[in-house]
Amino acid sequence: MARLGSWIESHPEGIYVRPADAWIDPSQPKARAWVTHGHADHARGGHTAVLATSETLAIMETRYGPQSGQPIAYDETIRVGEVDVRFVPAGHVLGSAQIVMEHKGERVVVSGDYKRRPDPTCAPFVPVPCDIFITEATFGLPVFRHPDTGSEIDRLLHRLHADPERCVLVGAYALGKAQRIITELRQRGHHDPIYYHGAVERLCRLYEELGVELGELRPATGVAKDELKGRIVIAPPGALNDRWSRRLPDPVTAMASGWMRIRQRARQRNVELPLIISDHADWDELTTTIRELEPTEVWITHGREEALKHWCMTHQIKACELNLVGYEDEDD
Ligand SMILES: [Zn+2]
Ligand SMILES: [Zn+2]
Image (cartoon, rainbow, N blue to C red):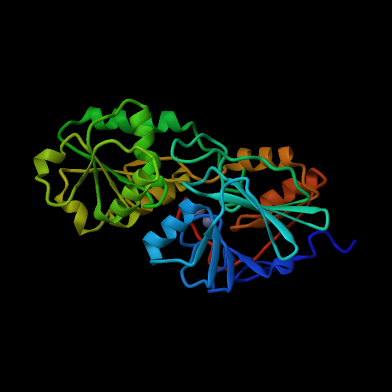
């Protein structure tokens, strides 16, 4: 047989699956796109035909308008050209999937973005042993070890209750992180109304339509300052330091991101309460997953691949990096 995975090509604009004539998460409009999840660095508008989970298609329609999409259920296998394709949960955001492909006896799994720890808003990651694992490595350095999510949420609640005259303004990406923070708060017993910035509203509503319960949400805009004292307000990271936040009562600025592990990143955004809550695998999750899947080769995307490449090599696994452009952390 030819080189392992010779039917899968890496191009700057995405991964091309030749025997299916399909692109995975292409950054340019394509005739046939398979999309792992709804974050903007993976899901773009303008494709002729999109194969994705129904949740991902719904997210794309919310963001880009009507899609000529074909929904695929988790674990359903379809044949496209000469490739059997299956989407399995990636545990990243609602509807997120790994793409499992089989061709001529070889199995390749494209992880998309993923994490292994529980997330009340989406189905958990399903490990699929494979010959080639194409993995993200957003946090592919041993320094990245995300703490327990519950303890981070408890720090947030503790801070909220410590000063009833202030509010806590939490910066969280509009797709996935915002809804996860809200559901994690509900699970820790916080049932007060949570206030939101307008930019997260549509996706919160969509999550609710798709069956994720978020409890009582209220718009923060147009509300008297006094009403917001002692409340949690969720806003996209870009709103943390802009004019919008001046309407809030002396906000404690928090941010929920894997990058909050790096103090300098927190300082750059004037974050007083950094919360290390990530929708990506940390170092231990990355290496545990590779151990579990036992691939012959690992291909690495999303930067910071050197350490993981080295780790693979010391574990007798061939590894290389893929230089895809445009994968950035909309969603850390
Ligand atoms: Zn993502
Ligand atoms: Zn990504």
